[in-house]
Length: 296
Image 1 (tube, rainbow, N blue to C red):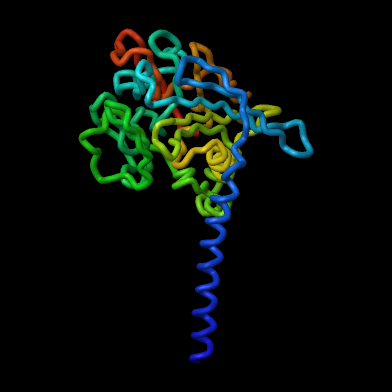
Image 2: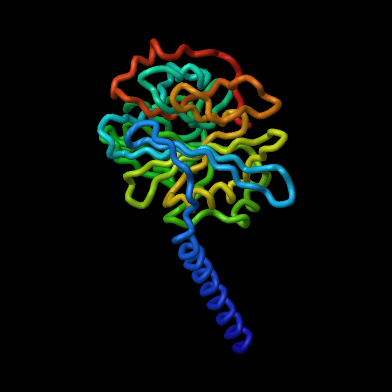
């Protein structure tokens, strides 16, 4: 019995060492392998790029749309659209002073949002599944954080915050296919996806939207999207609403193409926006459209 116990102890130690080695190896493997993209400057401190990743043995590609925002750029401002705009279509945001927008929260047909949701310092009511929902939160002076384990209550200093489902990258380590297998088809199926992350300095925010459900463009499992974000230097990231809600707009133009079965833009609960002014007249910018929404 003692010999068996010794062998079991050795086995556990070896397994632990292997896991630690694998994590360290993954982190080291990402260093120096950042994918080079062709970036278009939208504004000083705001860059856009489209990336097509060929899939071996077919004409199908993964198509990713990237946006990099410098949080230190003084004339660019980050915000989450308010509850009064719940039910908007993303095209409503294609006007000044907004220069970029990305769909955000998961939501119900009544546009109740997933997890903690804060716009301009005001907490949304009617949200659901609060505690287990990782989130991105920013203060009024653009100090942003990815909170992988959401607190019971919102922090008083949060000016804008939105929650997603599943962390993609934590401390530079992307989730894996084994992680995806534990959460089923939601994670393993190649869906269109939307995600937001921060680099290690917390001075650069990265948005990414993966197209999908098209004849020649497939979506991505969560682990594949997480890896691509890590390759772009993202240290921490959260998966936001995707599927038919996925939409990235830049300079009054939808950069993402719709799924083949959904030619019209879908109403969403809210969106992250980059604006050239800190004060936005939301009442003039968007009107609620009380149409049923959908998560996927």
